Image 1 (cartoon, rainbow, N blue to C red):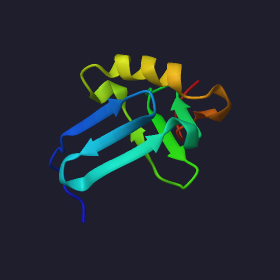
Image 2 (image 1 turned 90 degrees about the vertical axis):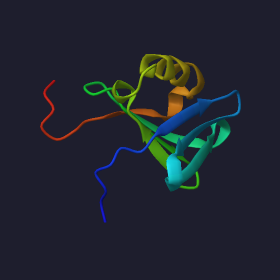
Image 3 (image 1 turned 90 degrees about the horizontal axis):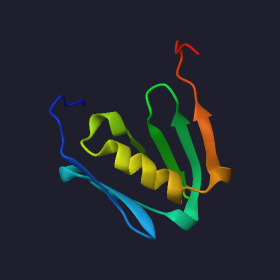
Length: 93
């Protein structure tokens, strides 16, 4: 079942982890040390983060106040070796 209501989402970044808190939907916590993949879309700016256990979430900075601050922190913390480019179908170069 899909719900069209907006859910308040909070991103918390600390030295050890990044957390996504989504109201009643719960909490997803990713440790920087266990981050396995970080897909980045150069067109829309989202980050698709996944850890070694398959847990993850998408950060869409354009949707959030302070989104560019989140992007700066991700660029500082995410290991370069796990970053790859996401290409959405139909996105132009």
